[in-house]
Image 1: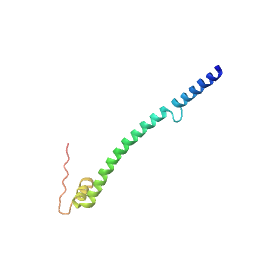
Image 2: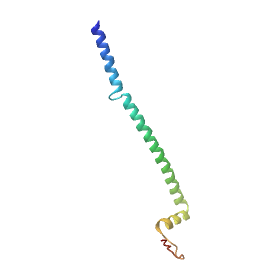
Image 3: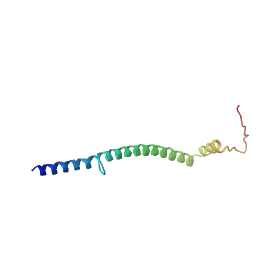
Image 4: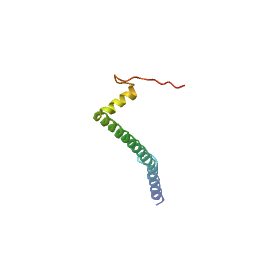
Amino acid sequence: MKLLWSIMVLLIILLQVRLWVGEGSFAQVWSLEDAIAEQRAENSDLALRNERLFAEVKNLRGRQDALEERARMNLGLIREDETFFLVVEK
C-alpha cells in the first residue's frame, strides 16, 4: 500500500513539474502573452504610421500645390519667375 501511495505522490510531483517548467508551462504561457502584447503595441504604432503615409500619398496624388510645396521644402526647387534668397544666421 505504501508503494502505491509513493508512486501516486511521485506522479503528482512529476505532473506539477511539467506544469511549472518546460514546454507548455505557465512560465512559457506568460512570456508568450507578454510577447503578444508587445507585438500588438508595435502593430498599432505601425498601423498609425501607415495611415499617415497613405494620407500623405493621397494628398500628393490629388493636389498639385502639395507636390509643389514638398519640392520646395525638401529639394529647394524654385519657379522660373522667382528669386532665391539664402539667409545665413550666425
